[in-house]
Length: 286
Image: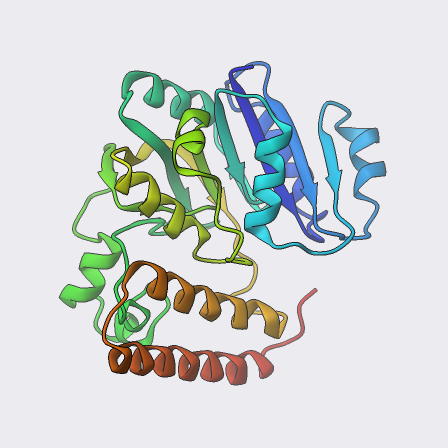
């Protein structure tokens, strides 16, 4: 088997069918598709048996998180290349084949991601530099980036000085859609299950590059990513896990003076508190 696709599902039946249709048409024949369901209790197995009988379902009795679900998919598949996807990510054209062909042509590249687009066609800034302790002040959603988009810290982290028109090596790409070699996973390990959700993709890419492989963004392969949490309320756990993942990542990869770590942790938790307060004012999610 050349290509296996792993899609982690959690109450996403409104978008998952479109994801699977696009995946089946994405240009790489004989794709092995596994959907890992984190206890959605939404009739997923019956829906896939009816509409996508080629897809296999792994059903969990609880929400085990994104990293652990991906690892379950890795263990249950056999492809030389593994395409890890969110259900709200939709490949365009022959994107899967384009990513596989890039890995074929670049044997030292261990992981590659497509150019991710927002639904309006704008670029999602999904390929970035590795974060440091204060990147949370200059990420794509931060107030400082919105007020001063040309500041050097945001430009460095978000790679906004790159035209994103041709393939290049980057530090990391979004886990919403990434293709990785199985031999790389055998060498560096699967995703770190200490991350429930968020930052497991940064950590994985960092471990891959530390092992001597490259990570690349391939704009010739494109996918639309419909992130649905920007204007509606999300579960408080989502916000808390995002920030807990930041803290875990920095402690794991940037051990430093305890005072500096304490300051960074405090600022990250303060940001989480502000986001929780803002989230409470948003209309409920669907």
